[in-house]
Length: 162
Figure (cartoon, rainbow, N blue to C red):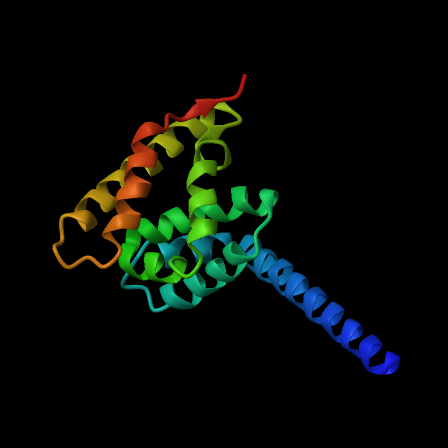
């Protein structure tokens, strides 16, 4: 009996370690292929959009505080390019989505140096435009999530750290 319990503990530990190393491997891949990822996520017509989005979502689902800041801009790029696909990928975890909404100001729209302010403002405007366009479609299945994100983004200002 004790041997079975020990085996179960070892198995569960290895699953947890594997999941953690998979998240790290995915994040390493996203980071080392930044230009490729940016190109794939900025064009809904890209054949690479869905595989890259799946990788981003895999990291997003298991993110911690540090990963939130790294992965959130990629999620926003995907929403701009393809809101419905991206919201569909995010909708399985509403609690996580709600926490993420509350973290956008600090995790995404905070500039560390003056050169980041304009690109962040551009990202904010593109996101607002994309969400506004998505919301007006009468058959948009994720209209509620898009409205909540739009309201959050509209309430945010790009903040410059002193």
